[in-house]
Image (cartoon, rainbow, N blue to C red; front, side, top):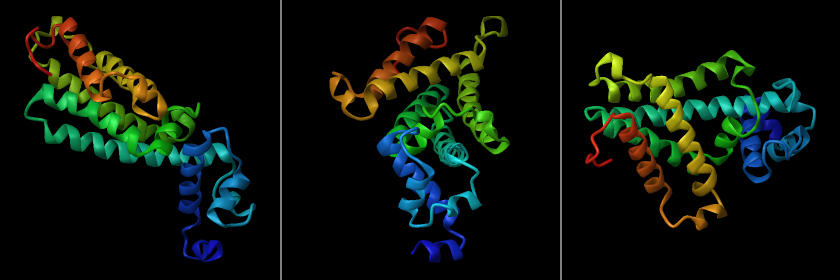
Length: 207
């Protein structure tokens, strides 16, 4: 099967798919190129026709993850765009949903220790993902006078960090059982407190 896949031009993606499975099961440092080759049903030498090493393989898994992430974040933002607050909150929910449904991608993107500047394609995809949340933040703060408007990139980064924390503590695996509240509720209440503190939404606004 492996040789047939290679002749049809599918070896590169088969290796990425194998890597995603291994990352989800063992972590980004818990597997070898040989294991990825075995799971993809090709020889141990075959992966090196496409990737110089494991880091390049993980980088491609991360790049593909960011592409999926961008699509889902954009869809969430666009669906709720008429309401800036709803659009902003939708991007947070999309973050949690992606972490659950694409565990291998998520780990490759955010927990592999890989720099997004490893290659231009990865850097571009990561930048587009950050830009969506920054755009949502800018729309949410547009009603404030410029001298009272917090930098959109700053509070977008804070919310990104909050989302990542909720994912790590409560949204993936057994640790989630320790939370008395659904991860979505934790994130939305936290974002609400933060936005009220910045004066972006009135105290009695529901999120």
